[in-house]
Structure formats: C-alpha cells, structure tokens
Length: 115
Image (tube, one colour):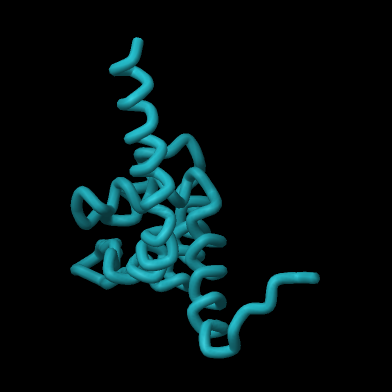
C-alpha cells in the first residue's frame, strides 16, 4: 500500500518538491553555495562556471522559480541574492532524521574506543 500524505501537508510537500527539484542539479547547488558567500552579478557568477552565460541564467531562473534566489537591477548589473530563509522547509523536513545520524556517530565512537 502506498504511503498516504496527510492533506494538511500537501502544500509543504509541494514546496519541498520544488526546492528539491531546484537543488537536484549540481550547478544550481554550486550557484547557491556561491551566493551564500555574497551577492553576485549574473556575469560575475557566470564566470565561475564552464558553461555559457545563458545557461547560467536558465539555472538562476529555476532557482528563482523555487524562491531560493532573487535578482534586482543595480545600474546596468543584475544582482543575484540568495534567499536562505526559503531553505527552512528543507531543514524542517530533514531535522527529524538527525537522531539517526547522531546515533550512528555514537556507535562509531564506541566502536573506535574499543579498537
């Protein structure tokens, strides 16, 4: 029997689908990483990748559609900004699994002490 998603979580699940979809591509994850450091212009950002500026712009559009990046015009430059608060649903979804990681690390520590 397939897992049934509670109806009150459908909006959250849809939001997560968009976020995970946007973050599924390694170039987009790298863009998010660069923008976590500071705001960058599209051309400056494009210089960091071995792909064309239009390709970087397409990746930025996907990130914008997911709400992870915003762009604004500053003079002649299009400045890109990470919207880190939009990652909150991902953090909330992942956090219940933290007990598995900490348990695994505790078992690893115990094993290493035995050796």
